[in-house]
Length: 423
Image (tube, rainbow, N blue to C red; front, side, top):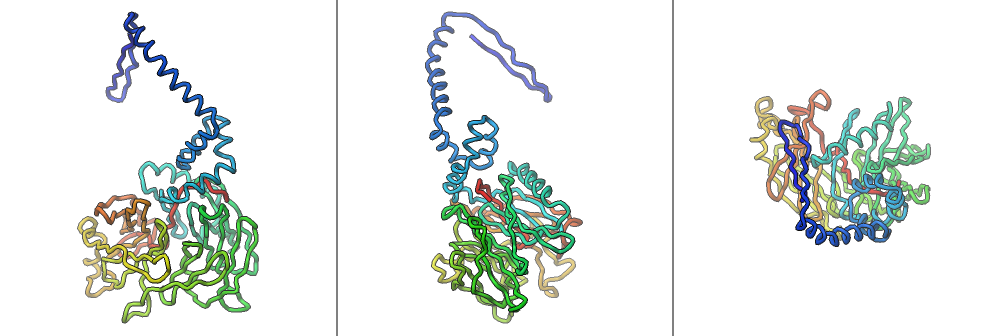
């Protein structure tokens, strides 16, 4: 029989010591298990030799694992990297792969990637380096993300901006040509793998001759721009990125009605706005985005409030309804630096609390979390169980000093999900 041990002490590993003893009982035991070993080996060979079976297995794996498995053999590389498989994987995992694994944070001139799970940290570092190599000396601007794809503008010293679509999971990117007559105010991605493998870029641009904002849509499939007949005069529309949901790009406004453009027809679609609080001339919207197949909005009605509602737009566009009510007062005990009472007493200052809701996350299991930026910290709060987890420290010398410390606001964060989609 075979026996052995392995001992570890103080970091040193003592090699396994083997003792081999011949006996008839041992030979009988080996003969008993040989058919099992043979059956396992035979099953493995059948799986490895069946492309259909391998495909079914691979379709159930996340993109990160598949990219690693490409190194196993030429056969696996050929299968996983094929256009057919990548389209099939992107379409089949359009819902499950939409769970956010990280957040792209950008505050001019700095940017970084924040992993939501510890095992993703090294992956976020690779993505950061990948984008840094592409950027060179140019300034990152005009960012928008949608279902795993990222639209990034690189502004050079001569003020010219080049736009690219990135799949940061695969490292592939594509240049988007923009006509010189279009003075770009914002670029917005529209990508739904359930509907098509093509993505669209909705550009809000300023027409000098007409002195108004215009809309054009670029298709990755045709490589052609379609110009909409719609236009608007909302100056603050281009201040915030649009959000793609249910075939349309949606924009909110702090002072005007919300706006919605149907991508396939390039026509405006009616959508409800939230009310402007009585006695104010503006809304105080802290977050606007899609998560878990729904469109959400977070609005703080009074600057003194440390509680807020998470609103959800009904699928028939009839109204906004309160989905969650969140009170963060307990956080002031854990993080006293978010309270400005010592320097700015609440009765004399309109912003007694320093926090920003960076991102609202809702997964397929209906678990809801809020990513919150505090002075010097980024934490994630689970609405259902009340748990708080620290994700990152923010250095004051790297980012904006604002009410007691460095922090991001809600329009500095862009979700990153994994996908094998083509660009």
